Length: 486
Image 1 (cartoon, rainbow, N blue to C red):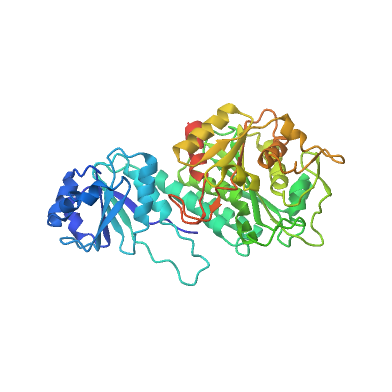
Image 2 (cartoon, helix red, strand yellow):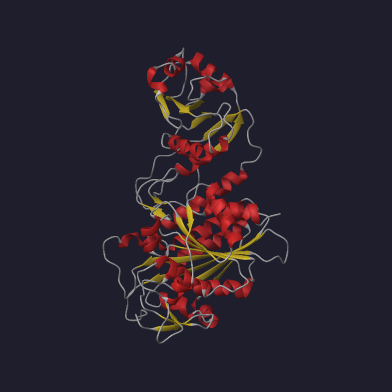
């Protein structure tokens, strides 16, 4: 798994500036005023900084831009990167600017002179997130990135929580980026068993156990594959003994061909990311363990592979869920809800959670509705939903609540079973949520997150390269920290 770049904070030491190799990055206010740190850099560079900020071009630059002066006189560094930021820049701008610095980072590292910046930790977070590269399958690896030191007037007392969040996001990205012949249901389970080293209690339920539990909906999805279906249960018990946990449930389809309802060939290679929900749950569990979260949280992921074969589930088959409801399988490519419904029911039966949140790359309809900017949010609880939306907004992770209702539920009526697994093309994301709602007990506050559009993207975002984003790890970590600890 990918480790983040080495990062540390230190008190500003002006004597270290001329000795830094690699790059020196300096925060300057867009109005051109120079802090004490900037004035020292200006003297070292014999007025080069002053000439820059007094130039006509400088006034046209926008906050968040980085201007590079190569091989500056008076510095050992190969470059001086001038960062235009007001002292009280908002979180989004700070993270985006940190990401811009990450693209410049080389093997000799970087010294960031944050001067009087109000939240240098957000700049650092953006840098660490964007410095990520997935090269596990490349023979020629990405260039090594050196250590980053952020100098500021008052270094944060503890950056362990920052590091924990970054490691959780990168863990999710690695899982989601991995090809299906590397991340099988078995190797995925092995990666999660390694969380035991961090204090997470991990169990792997095999097919025999799943059959014993009656998970007919989940098992039908994987019956056409040679890869065995599994459910992995991860428990972090950092709260009070006996206190009901928060349950996070993730769809873990390690590859989705669509089964007998075969997907078109074009773009099918992207279906390695159909375990994105399970990837986010795994990243959150890692973050919680690393920061020693004072809460009880259980993460459950259903790991399957959806393949066509002589033994695959067919359109028209009727399967029985763990709850006991029968489901007519109209479309075998609507498999994620079949996986989730059994795991959600198991989570409630075993743990009686105080809240349950499921995540899945569930529907293409979600992408049509919201694009790649927002995940779709569905819930039976206004307080829980509002708390999540607040947490997502605070972390800059787009999320938008969509409606539910009986009319959508009626689209799932079946002639031969209790209900169907799809309700037709209209409101496809909503009818998928209505299907899952049937497996939520009345006393359980619940959120369904359809992350089809945000889990993996074709072009880079503000803090992630193209590919897996790790969306949701930061929002869920904040939700738990703000609402379920202490």
